[in-house]
Amino acid sequence: MGREAWRRFGSRGGRRGGGGPTDLGIDLRSVGTFTRSGAKMVADGSPGALVEVASGTRAVEDRGDGLGDLLVFEDSYRQWALRSKIEDTSPWTKTSWAFGTPAIAAPDGAVEALPQNTTITSTACRLMQTLAGSGAAIPDSARACVSVYARDAAADIFRFRTLNKAGTQVDTPNQTPSASGWQRHYVGVGVGVGSTNVQAGLLNGGATLQRFWDAFWGFQFDVGDHFPHRLARSTTAVVDVPADDLTLDSAEGAMLFTGPWRIAKVSLDGADTDRDASSVADLWSVDANNRVSLEHDGAYWRVRAYQGGALKASSVPIAWNAYGSIGAVDVRPADGVIAIEGVDGPAGPAWAWTSATSRFGGRVGGGNGLRGRIDPVIRRPS
Image 1 (cartoon, rainbow, N blue to C red):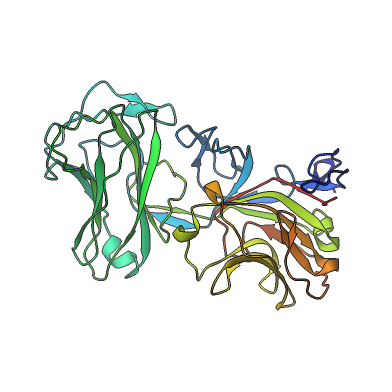
Image 2: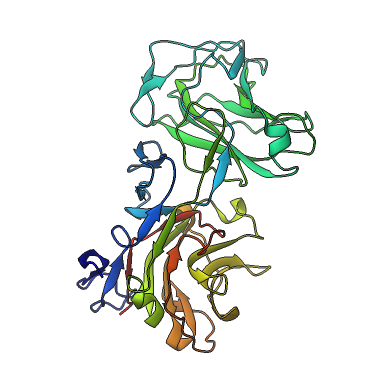
């Protein structure tokens, strides 16, 4: 086992109100084998400041929410829209929409966000693109999310417009850009039933005043969720982004099998209402039958542990905080307990996992990908 796999930490990370030294831990920033094909953008201190993380590189993100640098995991997904600058070139088509000059810096620092100098006040002012091939490829009734970065000192308004697979026009409620800088706006939509290619874009909010937005950038249409995935900066119309996959061999992950262990911070993407209640996300797994998962029990979201296919422990119901934070998760196999923020769930039978290759952020062999961030250092709770 490499030197980077195990580290000794001081008195940080004890239980709330407890303290005391922690035991050996695993630093997921350096241990294990990581794969992801394709670059993506993550926040660097605020939701409106982006940096690009190269293909095959672990993404560490600070959203400016007070949680600090956390390791990013994301399930595989498909994006159907042009994602970088918004302009009057294919696949965009505009109606009564006016662009200004010169270009300004986008959230990633590239000087390519074109100011909007639109003066028409009706919803006839719009900028749309057709998502070529989407009518056949996107499943009927699928969930989707349309999003964009916006900046506007005057707090003017805009809307998203989609024409779904049935050709039905859907305009979202008005969105008000922040006067303090770039901010990402998003709305969940349904793609409808039919075979027509989806169209998606932006339009005037329909107010009586003239609109002079500063700029829009990074328009995106994500299939499979009502919360936006991270930006995969591209000039192509469709991008398939595979899941972040971090696997540990049995030696690297030894402490996970002997327990107990703690993920000090877990933050899932979106709010409770943005998530599909039928989905299961694996925080850590050995296989389909041996895992720690985030799942819905029909009434509440909980963290659960399975050994040999049998449910061994279930946490108390999750209270979603800002940015989807659920706090610290403790896994205590010998006690038969999963705890969240120091609160034990009902005690069940003790269990033990057989040492093997394991995975963070999804299921060994694929599937059940996690959408969110975790503390990269796994410790033993004090």
